[in-house]
Image 1 (cartoon, rainbow, N blue to C red):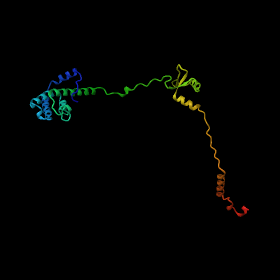
Image 2 (cartoon, helix red, strand yellow; image 1 turned 90 degrees about the vertical axis):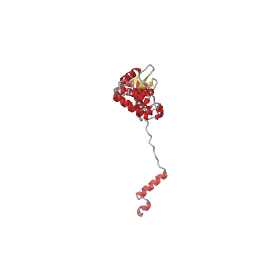
Image 3 (tube, helix red, strand yellow; image 1 turned 120 degrees about the vertical axis):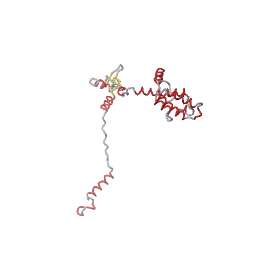
Image 4 (cartoon, rainbow, N blue to C red; image 1 turned 30 degrees about the horizontal axis):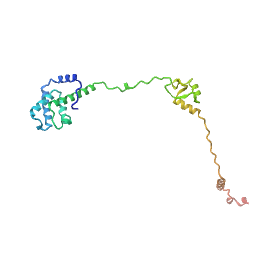
Length: 225
């Protein structure tokens, strides 16, 4: 905020000349704020306190009341600048500081007057469709799929394929993947055949007989003989 460089000589000369007209009320307010600034430092730092306050008042009276308040406020003023925390500024240093604050305010005001940015204007227009703009995979002429792609290109969307000087054809990724799937040989899944061992077959037959009550121990005597 402090010690900011001037924007341009032309702007500063105009701004200073416009501030030369000081009303009595503004001069009185500048004197009050000069006392505030002086009170923020050790009184012994000034050789002549009265003359120091008068010089500070003369500088402050060149600027509007809002700027005077800002540069002399103990919370935001020149005394918060690291360069002037320990020793009070002289009239020349205060003027340079005030000019920096004035330049910053003018920049903010000028930027605030600009029209709000329109994000939609930054968007690029969607490119026009072009033949072959979706073709990203090259299929050389010696590829086994090349004849099929060549025949397919006779009726396909022109955006999905293109040719160039080297022998072959460019196709879109989806076209290439779909062709691979369509031409992939199908393999019949072998059905595993499970066989039971003789011991397992006897155990299952015994369980079935027990379940159906056909074991010899369960049958009547006349059926056993």
